Length: 170
Image (cartoon, rainbow, N blue to C red; front, side, top):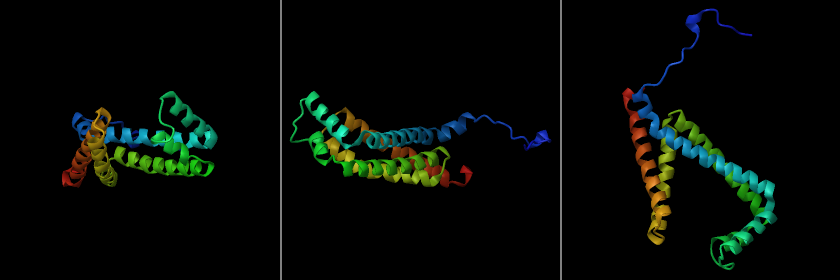
């Protein structure tokens, strides 16, 4: 077992100052959100693999009946048509890949890495036209919230990129 005989070599715990917390808070909050998305995507992928195509098909049918949805048109009807043994495995694989990419992004944001801020900002910018179109076609509180969240993410990560590029960011 390795022990340190010189107490001056023991790393000391240091509390963050208010300024340091403010400096990192935006990226940390986004990192938590991205990590949550990553976890949910991975849980969904695992669930799809465990559940299988038939139980997924059955669940979709229950949702169509429960909410009086049109069984021939709409999201759940399309999902029902696309669900098969092969597509469930492909979907689970894509969800696992999505979870891995966002898990790496969350780690980078938490560790204050510039590449992670760039990655997150570019991703949020790419979501803006999609959420903007959804807002235009189906204005409701969900589309407003999604659009606003993406705008805030772009602003916060843009600020973080700028902060990390200044020499004083050290």
